[in-house]
Image (cartoon, rainbow, N blue to C red; front, side, top):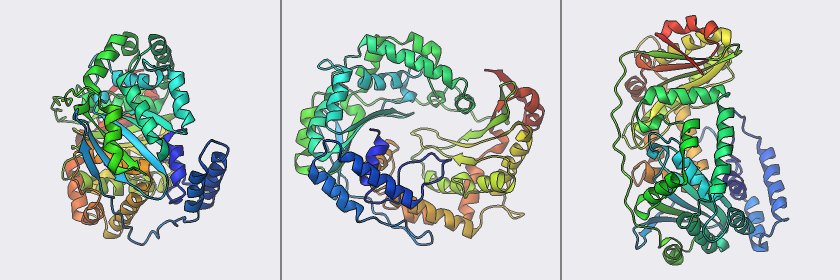
Length: 511
């Protein structure tokens, strides 16, 4: 089972949150969600799930909370966080949740793709995945997987730019046993060479397929172009890096980064706070103390003009479009209000970019803008795709919308009603995203990793609602730079180069 399926267990509490869906996919109707959950509960009955757990799930299903009125104000109080530290320096955080006998166990290691050696992009991902697939010194990968599956648990290892997450979602009765298995996996990895070679070949195949995906190509090239030599430029591994990675490289990365002082542990759900510290000490007390990883973040030179990069795919019927520039750190005081501003512009299917480019102009199936949070310098980027002949018109409209959004006069900026709708949405979404144990874990991990204030979520609604139309225009002008942005186009260069040249000197790349 995946982490998202485990969310379905607790979806009995708030069906309106539903299963996670891609941003381009419509949200299932409430009736469909109820049917999905009922089907899942029936499926659970075929598994070795204790009767008392099934009974708790059934009771929670009867307490379905309807989706909040879109015109009302959603209130959300982040639960109390308890913390402590093991003897080796591993910090831990616990949030107690009543209701369902479920728990989310998360080891977070500050070892993401930004920590990869410059010549071995993807080493962090390789190392993290081999924890799960390479077995331990005490059991094979198949045995480890079988033991975890027998306990009805979901194990995932996810590596992002700033950290790697080893997460287990399960019934709380099995927490102690699962903590022991997690500790074994993290502290006693076998890094079996045969398993490593099998994983390498799968990654080679995945990479080969990715090289024919225009969306993947666009994102790969975009990060290289806006970040340059910065560690955030590494979107994925390369064939050369995969061929060069050795078991010694993996061992070295693991020894350096998988250390008590370079990570922390988050447990949310049906957790016994009185005994948790001792249980975690038994499972992870032998993790080497080590030290916190430090990166000397390079300065990104501000560009002096807009750049247009066309990745040539002869005969392509569509053009994938990205427009981007670097912005600010996730811990910056402007990060949250700028997120609000971005959401008005392109955060969802009711935002300006989507409504104009899709609904009014019919140029694309969707157009969005994003401001991903990072420990160091983040980014602002717009993404869309369009038919090859409408590439120029789509770019024209994107830059027109940015100009209107940042303009102080001539009907520019953002209206009070438009902003208020966004604020209601953002505060309501937080209330939905902070329900299940896994969701609360994710929010708490973000707060710790990105150095957010201890009351970040408690003050979230107040701070979101404090943003004014003038703030939106000021922040958009400060952090969105169309005049020096990078434009990446993946499509038929022969057909789109002339239209692209209006926006800057065109560099054509053969992929």
